[in-house]
Amino acid sequence: MSNLIEGNNFHPNESLKDSSNFLRGTILEGLADETTGAIATADTQLTKFHGFYMQDDRDVRAERRRKKLEKAFSFMIRVRVPGGVCSPKQWLEMDRLANQYANGTLKLTTRQAFQFHGVIKSVLKRTIKEINDALLDTIAACGDVNRNVMCNPNPYESKHHQEAQDLAVAISEHLLPATRAYHEIWLDGEKILDSEEEQEPLYGKTYLPRKFKIVVAVPPMNDVDIYAHCLGFIAIVEKDKIVGYNVTVGGGMGMTHGKEETFPRLAEVMGFCTPEQAVDVAEKVMTVQRDYGDRSDRAHARLKYTIEDHGLDWFRGEVENRLGYSLGEARPFEFTDTGDRYGWTEGTDGNFHYGLYVENGRVKDVPGVRMMEGLRKIAEIHDGDFRLTANQNLVIGQVKPENREKIEALLEEYGISNERVRTGLRRSSMACVALPTCGLALAESERYLPDLVTDLEQIIEANGLRNEDIKIRMTGCPNGCGRPYLGEIGLVGRGPAIYNLYLGAGFDGARLNKLYRRDVQEANLVKVISPILEDFAKNREEGEHFGDFTIRAGYVEATERGAEFHKNLPEQVDSEAS
Ligand code: SRM
Ligand code: SF4
Image (tube, rainbow, N blue to C red; front, side, top):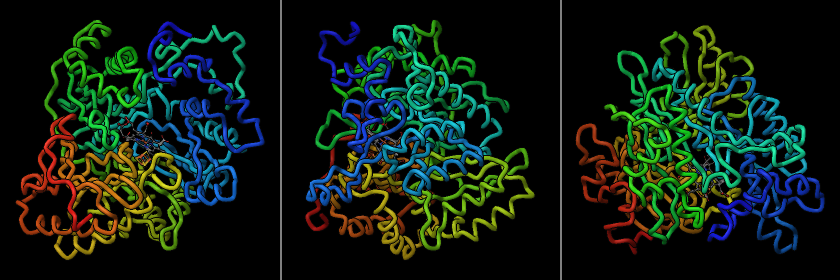
């Protein structure tokens, strides 16, 4: 056991990592055990670093318990896709793997990654190997490491986009764990006989206190929600050139109901760095967190709490000490929107990009909307790329002018063009996975939000708000996977069919929302939200966004950065409505 761990009050996960032989644990033995669909509990922590989670089908949990059967175990695999960019060939492989080994759907996540659900143990290794054969991988997609690095995905936004995307890839590669365990276990790589030979220069044996998240944004779009992440880079363009990046630190979404010491927090701008310095800055920010993050309490272990506790000036000082130089003064920038651009846009190189709405990121075939099949057909003829967005949508990117019509025809044929999306509310909706796979879900999310939106659409249409992009985000628990605290309407699961309702986030992603009603029953949500939408339709000012209106009209107070989130809450329970 390393000095770091010995004799201190560290969380049990710390000694688990420390003694795991660089993330090997007994994963191989667990895979070989045919008497159970599960793997050892300790290994379920380690496999996150390899990119997958053990789960069970919660829809059949009670029934299996009654029948005294083991839970219906399966695995969720997350694929690392820096900046969300993949080739049509890779798309076809993801499609094939989803059908062959998983539940026949693909989930495009809020961090621009693919997720497979329902992979059983006997095909786990094969699936991971075949993901790697497609030149993608799952390493560090989860776990106490740097996760998938996000980047604004639409090349239309800026001709500097490629540089920003290259930075996302460079940071992602630079911060990968060095352990050979991944190759050994999943790719039958050569075994390292003397484990002492192995080095983990950036992370050490205990890796980070908690997950770490990085994004790159290209203003004016804030589709990556830069303020929600540990570390962010805002591209600063001067005289048609990316001259560097403003660096943001200390954002995060997760909290626990009833624990006021946990809260979502917005990142702050810490300074400016040149393009050449950016990877180094990412490394140094991450290592300060590695050394100062809380390793005793995982609910307090994210970078946002390190900065909340020590202050931004202290943090900047630590980073600059390690860099050996000072960060520059932040440059002016402006974000306008956290949403995606839908439909066709033309890039500066004459290629076209189609922003496709994917409901809650779930690519599947349902009657009338055959998205899995339609995208497969598009991938078969497409020679550009696919770009997963941070809003769980997809950009069919780099379409040559001569291919545009063919792709349009396929979008129509399979019923998946954006024509099917009636309102700005639906276009701006986002839900986390939640039930039945997520072990932490308290309420439905992905399976329920579309129905709620359908009900709200009647109010929306009746009040002339059809084209209004109102950002509505739902999660099945307070962990914040759909970044609900940045929704103009945020709904967070409290229990089966019960949600807390938050209002007032900024359209540009720079202001958190605030609790408006606690514990609203699913059946009452429309009743609670409708009058506010009606009020908005009648009394909004020219160009005013819904989130801004709910603050001006006094529904909620504006929230400052983080700890304020739980302060000055209005009357909580509306007895009629909840
Ligand atoms: Fe998340 C845990 C799904 C983005 C904050 N998240 C989980 C787990 C793995 C549940 C678990 O630990 O057992 C969920 C798996 C559900 C399933 O069945 O697939 C899960 N998170 C997701 C995804 C798939 C939601 C989606 O519908 O797209 C997103 C995958 C991202 C990716 O590709 O890497 C996802 N999770 C996020 C985000 C948003 C983001 O990163 O931009 C957040 C909030 C930002 C942040 O980290 O502060 C987020 N997830 C969490 C947390 C709370 C962390 C915290 O600081 O408290 C947990 C719970 C935990 O870590 O203990 C969690
Ligand atoms: Fe699961 Fe909660 Fe994340 Fe939703 S927000 S996917 S319910 S952990």
